[in-house]
Length: 218
Image (cartoon, rainbow, N blue to C red; front, side, top):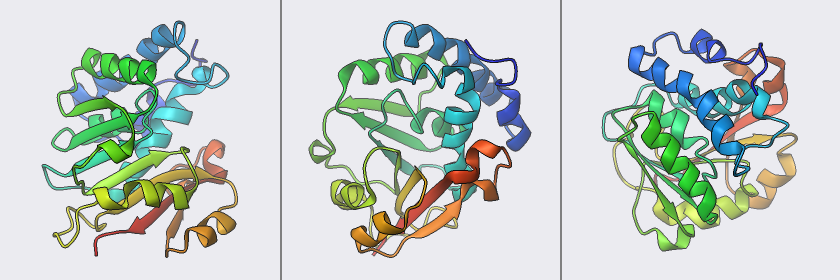
């Protein structure tokens, strides 16, 4: 069950530009995840009461970072699980396309059903490993899946190179992480931009959360 404090209002306070269709889709997520989570644990039961803050809004930190994008921009969500960050981002960017991939089939089924229930026609899901995906994307996004070095190894070949940036940020990896990232970034041996999520959202939950971006456009 959601807490009284956790509702879609927290999302709209940061994204007031969402239109009626986007708001309806966001509004529907709480009940849908609660229903599916009662059968298949796609969201930590300890977190389900904070779904909008800790999952939906957290996912949308990527949209806050990327800003406006041209129609047709392509995303892959590596390790999408139950659809985070892909589903909130697909709602935020209705003219962009999303491909969510995960090794756990039951989570992919939940993500697919929820996307269909809220009327998303710009997202599809695949049960498998990233090595099986040979498509290329403007951005690969991910949320707390694996260390940065592993993410880069898994997705570098899936990034479009030598193309015009679809927005202010060139093609690359954009992931959501928490805690002290210095050692993890050093081990990845790639230049990375770390942006605190608190730059965009003032809720205390985000004080230790970061967006990590690696430019893979060249």
